[in-house]
Image (cartoon, rainbow, N blue to C red):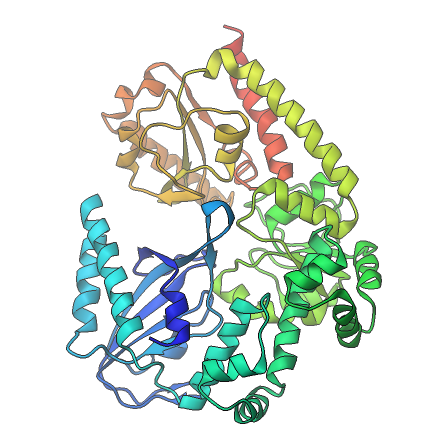
Length: 524
């Protein structure tokens, strides 16, 4: 097992399905391929093989890897790394990894067995996950590595190592050892292939992370320098000035004074609005009616690079989770303007504070949060006579699709801020989980909230939602539900996804909406 595989064996893996869902930017793809091929994988010609397996990072174009193979299977999964407090957070590979076949092992047979069990009941899905873990372990232990040249494989391994360990002390000699080469030969080869020395490349990674810390935290320069791997703040400042032309402090002042602020995610637009900032440009569509007055439209679901460049932004706000198409564009964002990346999986209050630091609105953020906490307490107290001791289920309905919302997004307000009770069996659903409509009846909540799922607000989608609701309500099990028998079914459809958006702006509106919905119940 090489160093990279050894490091990967320490992660947790969660199997998600056969095909990567759109928009889940933290999901990797495991490609199982069989049959002979003459195709090319950028930029290396793939040798003829009977079977192989690859792990592809989130957002990569799978068509670049599957051409020419006779049989193809895709399994989607997430990698989780232990963080502080015993929590686990998603991690993403920077480079694809290709493994040699495991001797005496039919990858397609294993893949088919995993696939069949994945479609079964809960015990079968557990067995699918166990088989998946065993397959990964066999690959890590038995594979000789990617089927590319040994030199390219060695360079890729060290690049991956740098991305994982930039915050530690990393020497040229350590990197050469990972590559299995002498230090001098490794340095020459690295520069030949990537145009920089290993130390220059590592410094670039560190400076990129330092920029994010400068703009989203209030840590001292010394603390930031040390957190990204620099020995002291003076060396950090010299390298920063060399790379950017300005000192770290001047860089921070420039960004905080920015006038042309662009948002590439709707929830970040919501955070900006909560701080009293309407972005100069943003994604605009009918899924999220954020009531922007003057913001320029740079795309509906993903940014249009030409439009983004044309508005000449001073700073771009984005997150690290993209759909496949946006992932391919994301490398260009830094070339257009300074980009502030707000971690997608952090709590919304933390996200708001980081946006506030980057825009110089820390005071406004704390005032807003203080007002929100008071409002949430008052709303919780006001609703208590109606909600106390009652379970609430949040169901999203879309065009032929249905989901259960969990403890993030709309659930962050209901189950978190208002302390309402989730139904037994809801489990640890984070954002949402797609289901067959019949699963709703197994929860039998006291209160049922129906809201949007993939709702663009078009007449066709609204018609499809009505049809889906009609299907749900025509099932004999519908009238047996406690919430239905007691007339405690409520709708949040009129604003599409405004109430389900994970942002300060939306959560504030949702408190108002819930009080409005249940005011008549309180007066009874």
